[in-house]
Image 1 (cartoon, rainbow, N blue to C red):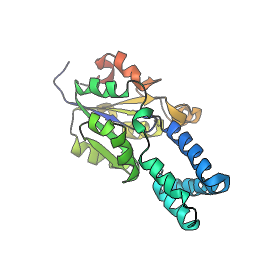
Image 2: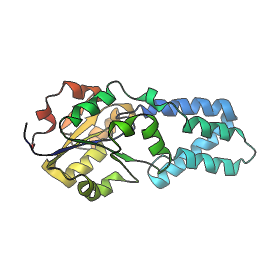
Image 3: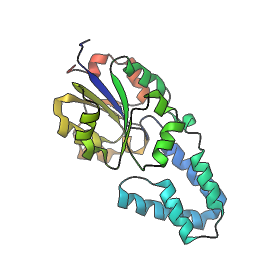
Image 4: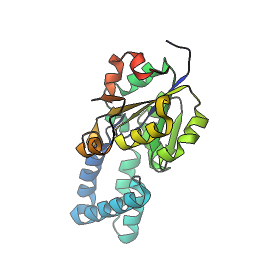
Length: 224
C-alpha cells in the first residue's frame, strides 16, 4: 500500500446502526404508553419537524407534543426510553470490526447529520464514539460542510460510507477522484429504487457494511 493518507468517513443511521429498527421500537413503545391518538399526533409533529430541519429530532418533537398535551405524563416515560435505549444492540453485524479494520489503513471518523442532543447520545451509547476514538462530526447538512471536513481531516484520499445515494453523489461532485463513494444498501434509503433513478452509480455498492471485511483495500483506495 501507498504511504499516502486516507480518511474513512462513516454515516451512522442505517449505515452502521439499524435506525429503522429503532424507529419501529419507538413507535411500538409510544403507542403502548400514550395511545393511538397521541402517538399519531407525535408522528405528525415529527414529520413536520423533519421537513423543516432536514433531520430527525425525536426529543424536540416530543417536547412540542408535550406542549400540546401537557397532561400526558407518559411522555416522560417515552423520553427516558429514548435516552436510555440500548443502541449497542442495534449495530449492524460486523460494524465495529469494519471500523477496526479501516483504522489499520487510515483515519476513521463519523460524519453524520442530526440534532446536537440525541444524535451524540445515540453514537455514544452504541459504542461508535469510542470505536472512532471520539472523531465524530455531526452537522445539520453534512454535504454543505465538505470544506470543514477537509479542514478537520486533511487526507490525500477519502472513503465515504453512506446509505443515502444522494449524499454520496453530492460529495463525489465536490471532491471528484479524491473520494471513493460506498453505497451501503441497508435500511429504507438503501432499498429505494428512486435513488438509483435520480443519481449516478456510486463507486462501490455494498449490500451490508460487513462486506468491507472481505474487500481488498485497493478497491476502496484506488487513488492512494
